[in-house]
Length: 63
Image 1 (spheres, rainbow, N blue to C red):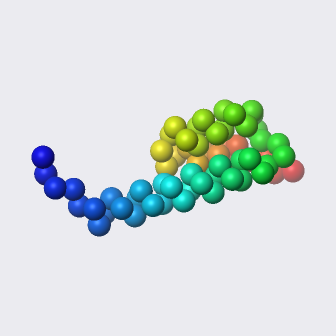
Image 2: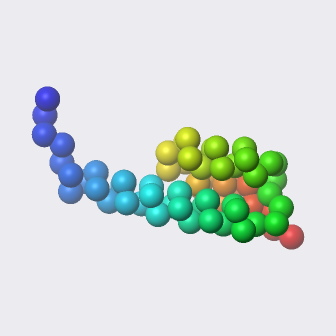
Image 3: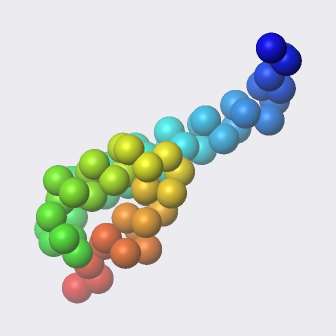
């Protein structure tokens, strides 16, 4: 098995964690979302990197 280049992978992992935490906090605090909150929480947690981005682009309701 080849050695992983952690210098390239570590920033992506940190970015994923920060984005997921920020999206989860925002989703929980948000009064209304486009669709049920439980669905967005599942998407944020299960779809790495893309899930939080989808929430911010589609899931937030701008009222």
